[in-house]
Amino acid sequence: MLTFSLREWKLNDAQNLALAINNKKVLDNLRDGIPYPYTEQDGKDFITAMLSADKNSTFAFAIEIEGKVVGSIAVFRQNNIHFKTAELGYYLAEEYWGKGIMTEAVKQVCKCVFDNSDIIRIYAEPFAHNIGSCRVLEKAGFQFEGLLRANAVKNGAIIDMKMYALIR
Image (cartoon, rainbow, N blue to C red; front, side, top):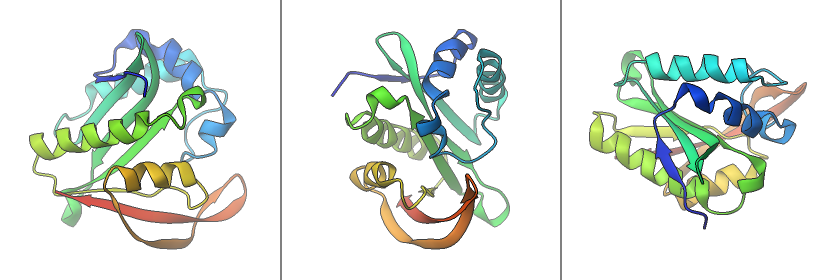
């Protein structure tokens, strides 16, 4: 496995962030709302939002390899009765898929969140057809909790999602 590090975002990461995410294969596995094409300005806007977010509600990290940002991983606290629950989201530049990087990043981020907050449950909802992401979660210790049938519309298709969770 390539050596990577997780660190806080820096504004000068925007160009590498745009290179990592400006790929239809990456975006096809993410929720809508991320622009395509993804520009350096989009990256600056995202990074600014992550840096200014409440540190007790948003745990956001850049994934860096050899001094270059190649992905993103974040945990977002939920509201109301779910205030001790958080949602995990991540992506990685395509050239780094299948190398064990994201599984290890998920493990590290979940440990960090559990060690530094009162969150007791972290969940993720990958698209059911995204086998790579489902495997990442399984290898990181998440349990499959169920199939969310016809739960989303992506690229004009109605698709299923899966619910995975890790409990403190």
